[in-house]
Image (tube, rainbow, N blue to C red; front, side, top):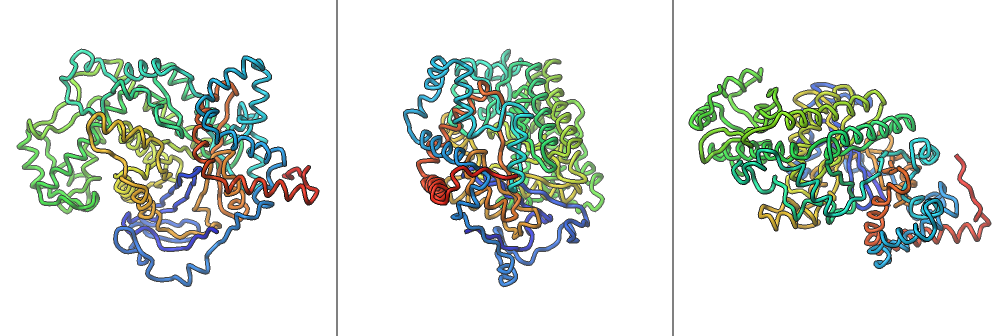
Length: 590
């Protein structure tokens, strides 16, 4: 059984947040929208930004009042009623699910799935092989070949209360050697190639050959490798088509993009390092003023002391005047959000890549020099992102920016935040992604929520567990930096509970659930028919070009299906019910 209780808003973030939970497969994904202007009206409820929330206390927040009222709002869903759960499927679709899930549980077939599919293609020929795949694996997990192909499935799901998050799932099928070559070429700057080891770089934010094939240990996320600027333009055009397809298929669709598809990853590595070093420097300055050990948003720097210290470092700016001039109600102190504004107004992109060196007592460039082409590549990445955001706004589609590895993610989050500042003024359009298996997840969310409250734009996000755990841990251990992942499952659970203390009912359209297409239908459709907004993550693309995606689905489902006997039992139960009641030829009506 499932239920939602209404509780007051999140106190620590001090913003009115609308959490929309997306449960993708086993990993919970939450979509968050925040109306954080000084005073707003949303869904008929008037609220003030920064209001105190009496129902929560302390870090995680506790329910203290209103238990009886909350109980009145409980909504129950019975997931055992197979007739309701599978009424969007005919009997052949149920049988296909059983066969596919069973095959995915055999280790030999999963381990050798590429070889098996290549052999089947040779025996059957391309045309017959494509038809076989559409009847089995492709038909189970992929909606169709193009935006016209996918419309019937999207419309059928919509009629049963399930929306769509479109994802064009074509992937390059390249060798490990080619992936490594592309990654090393695209993540190392000209200055680094000329002066190996002479720039002020941390090993975490440098490319390492043993981890340059970023597909290793990842089963739930698509991977892009940089080839050239023309390829990035092609990726952008593909995303635009996906956005338009989503807008043309439904009134409330989502589309997903990845930053690494839109430009040279060298910039993401470098900008991430700069952001992390500036944040680390703020923490160092706070410790110098006796403020260490506090939560990120609770740390404050006294400006007079800051000016004195920065002058000793050789920084010539008027930091006191900078911050007091930007804040109408300056208190003589700044927090992390104020500190981050130091790099907001730099016009030349390469000028962003300057970091403080405490040991040498000065500010210095991250790299010795940038070529004109590298500067242009950085600008083109930002331009492509902006083009996609404009298309999403014009098409009435919400754009989700997927999370990636931790050595890219600070830059990805910051660029996404800049899009939110521009496009989330009237409504949530751009959605950031927060990986809850990261130790820093809670601080990242609370800081971004607070920034949206101060600046008056809609905070929007999805919360995911994360797809790179094994790769991240192995890389941290081998290269020699702190493991960024929470130590255990319960720690990640606590990240969710600290962020998910809102009680919302289905009719408010603030809690969203979602799963991958072809999986967990016994959860998606009962929730949708009970009034919850539910979405399927809908991949599409030509049969031959989504083979890498299907290969990963097979690998992912192996572990899932071994522990998902319940889903197969429900499928058999519904097939036997239809056989006994003479409904074996049942066809969904929509």
